[in-house]
Length: 472
Image 1: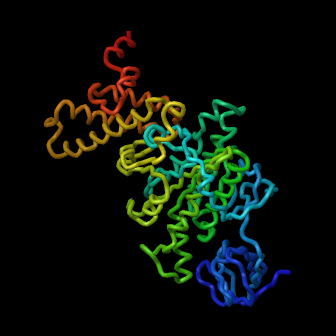
Image 2: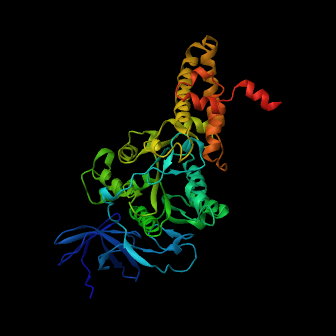
Image 3: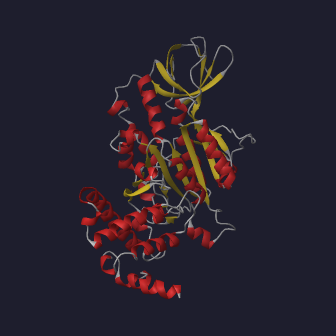
C-alpha cells in the first residue's frame, strides 16, 4: 500500500521539497495531487533520511503545502513496441498525435544499462545521408556519435530533416528487405523547440513519408524545462529496443542539446548547487556522457544506434562548455557556418573544422568506393589552400597571384558552389558525390594531385582532351 504524505515544506522553481519518515529511492516516480484534484508526475532528484527533492515534469504551479505526495516505488519507464514507429509522443512519452494508446510489449527503465566495453563492436559500416559535405568529407558510420555544431538562426533543423529523410544503409538496401527503409529507423527527440519549429518538423515528416519509419518525441519551449531532462532518455531507450531487440539500424537525432543543458542549469540553481563553468553544473560532462555513450553496436546483435546530437553554440563560441564538453565525448563534429549561410550555400557545412574520427574505418572498397579516402584528402588540401589564398587576395589583390594560385582560388569557389551546395531536397548517393569531387579536382593540373594514388588518377581524372572527345 502506497503511503501518502502532506509534508511539502518548500517549492523552488521546478522542484518540490517534502519531509519523509522512511527511505525513498533515487529516481523514483512520484505523483503529486493538488487540492483541486490535478495529478502531476515527478521524479526523486535527491533523497536523504529526512527529506526528498522532487522534480515535477508538468510544472509546479498550483502545488502548495496542502498537496499530497505519493511515492510509487518504481523509476520512470518507457513502454516499448515496434508499433511506436510512425507515432508522435510528448517529451514525457505520452501520445500527442491523436492515435490510440500505446500497448507495449514491455517496459524498460529510461536510464538504460551501460554497454559492456568488451561487448562493443567497432563501428565501421557506412551510413549514407545523401549530403555530400558529410558523406564525402565527414562520413557517418553506424554506431558513431557525430554532433552538429550550429548557431542561433542557422539552418541546422533543415539539415537534420534532410538527414532524417534521406539516411539509408546502402548494404541493407542492396542485400535484402522488400524496400530500402525496411531495416532503418529514425528517432527524433526535440527539446525546447518553438511551436513554429515543431509544425515545420511535423509538416516535413508527413509530407515526405519519413514519419512511417520514425518515432518523434516533442518537448516544446513552453513545456516544463524539467521534462527536457527525460526526453533524450526516452528517445534513446526506444532506440536501444529497436536496435538491439528488433534488429533495426537506428539514427537518433537530438535537437537542441543546448536547451537540455539549460534545463540542467535551471534545476541545479533550484537545488542551490555550487555552479561550475558559466553557471552550468559541475557534473554536466558526466550527464552528457550518459546520453552520448548510449550509441554503438553490440557483438552478436544485428542493429546499431547512431547519434546526431544538434547544439547551438551561444555566441557561436565553440569553447562554450556545451560544445566543448560534447566534443570531448563524441567522435567528431559537423560545423554549420554563418558565412556560408549568408552566401546562400545550402546546407552551409564548413568542412575544414568539421571532423569524423571514425571515417577512415568505414570508407573505401567494400564500403563506399576505392577512391573515397584519397579524393577526400585531396579535396581538403585544395580547399584549405584556396581558403588561405582568399586571405592573401584581400591584402595584395588577385593580380599579384600566380596562375597556380588563381586555380586554387577558383577551386575554392567551385567547391562551395558545386560540392557543398546542393539544396535541402537533393539526395546524392556516395558515387555521385565522389564524381563531383573528381570533376572539381580535374580543374587542377595532374601534378597537383599529390594525395591520390596514380592508378586512381588514371582511372578517374578527366582532362580537357577527354572532355572534348565526350562532346564529339
